[in-house]
Length: 468
Ligand SMILES: Nc1ncnc2c1ncn2[C@@H]1O[C@H](COP(=O)(O)OP(=O)(O)OP(=O)(O)O)[C@@H](O)[C@H]1O
Image (cartoon, rainbow, N blue to C red):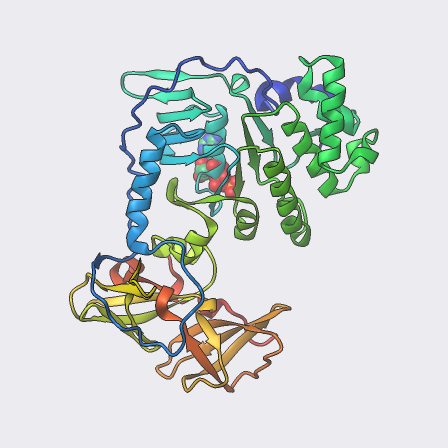
């Protein structure tokens, strides 16, 4: 979108695209940041009783190491919470935002260190943009606190109500439609938030930003003479020019085609990292979130269900909802037998991030009673295609993805799983292929918990199309 001059005043007053003013609230950070977070009421998918060493029934040891075992997830959250008390660069604690009678953001808590990139990921309407706008001060909060760079921006409690005006928060914003000024050149768009800078400083900063986003040769063009991706970079340069303390990006790539999105997301990440910019992105696109963010928060109906690295989200989802939302996979049946989970793919023992003196991993029991029905999340990369394996599965569907095929496989008992296989292994539907399940890193959930979620018939493998 390109803005008409008449919109400029409204635009700057309402959207505060560049908040150049550094006169932020002077109240120092004094909160103890108690853990009152009902948003932190996320559960790990499994329980455990340490420590009992068990053998792993597996024919090959995986190279892959998960970054943190599920049983440590609560500890990790405690660590996060104690870090909040030790003064993170940016923190949100128990934020509540609503419209009329409806709570839209419900007890959100998170933190970022300086230079980290966070992301809100979730289905349409889950409250992502509202959370971002509340952080910018464009929506009033009904509860909670926000701190940035040792300054209290918002505090809403029964005893206290405090909010720094949006334009004084030191934040920059990049909008979905870029909101560039159509009558101004690229250089003048970038200079827009620098009105308090000296002419020389402004000129130097604009040149620096043009160079950063590789648009120096387009400095004198109008936005409508640029491609979508170039316009997006102008918007980014304009938001970064005043050196915001926090950059907010609301679906910044949604107007671009899919191929361009991912490469631009990586490009933007590179720029943010080079400038050590702390940022929060809103998106519903998992690939975009993973390409850009250090920490991703999966939101569901106003709640931040899990705030973690992309790898942790994928490999250690704390709930079936997160497991389904992030990545592909299938849920297969299991049953607890003396602390292990028996499945059609083999027995699963609970691995801990504890190793004996010879470097062998230690295992513990799952803390469910014997006979408890369990659902096991099996990702496509947990099932290796191996012609030499005695365990086989029937190919019932496949999708060509260039470098890989995503195969849908049926086990002997009728359950289906997915497997990501290099595309030079071309197996026809109806044939059997050898598989090697890597069960050391799968996540298990109590079946009751899975039943209570939106997991589609427990089996996302059904979403794989037939041969294409
Ligand atoms: N100004 C408003 N007044 C009343 N309700 C609103 C307002 N803005 C948003 N909502 C409602 O709040 C909920 C969350 O909206 P929000 O825009 O934050 O979601 P979102 O996750 O960003 O969605 P999307 O991905 O579609 O942009 C929705 O149900 C929406 O209808």
